[in-house]
Length: 106
Image (cartoon, rainbow, N blue to C red; front, side, top):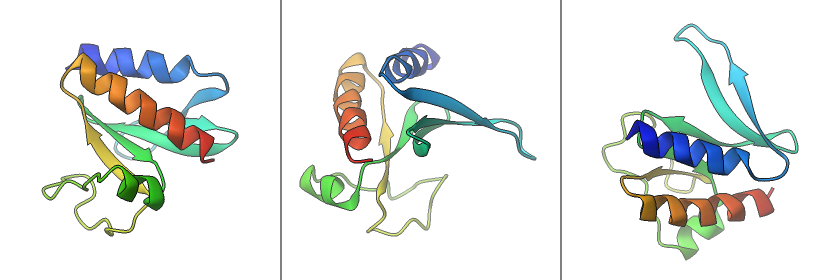
């Protein structure tokens, strides 16, 4: 899975204007992706991207918040953030489409 995460990170950072921001904290570093000064994504573990897609696009694409989320178990169903798991290169292709959509929405 670490290979897919590295591929996805490279693809996201290849988008014009996207930067990676490091947030130091008590539990170690936290990294997020930023465009025009706004956070829009970050990883959870080795195979999940938490993406700020907007409530409208989440509903339009019929995306579901994971029921057993260990990172955001109390996230509201109307949240503009969605946790997206990836296990194959095909998953990365779809996630990159949503990443581009998220950036256009900022």
